[in-house]
Length: 124
Image (cartoon, rainbow, N blue to C red; front, side, top):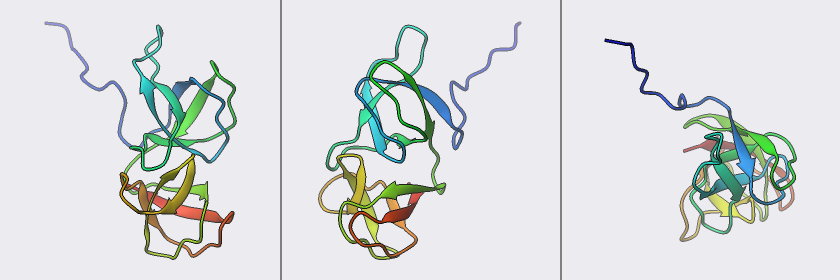
């Protein structure tokens, strides 16, 4: 009997995804739809309160592959769209981090930053 792997991606590892819209480095991203023909996840900028798939590691134009940082407990840098306090739960807001409201929690801030500051977020 042949050895059959069950993992598609390993948790906490970076992976490549196909951008369906322009994406900037350090933006929260979310799944945009089915995988592309090569099996890569398709992603877009995470709108307000969206379920976060990870954080883009570099800029990408529509149709390009982009490396995505993922993994629960992993600390990433994301631009803050509003003031954030250390320990506060955050959610996505047009790709940026915002204090958690009614959307999906993306992670927890480990530093205090003003609006437009660089937040350090421990991903959920």
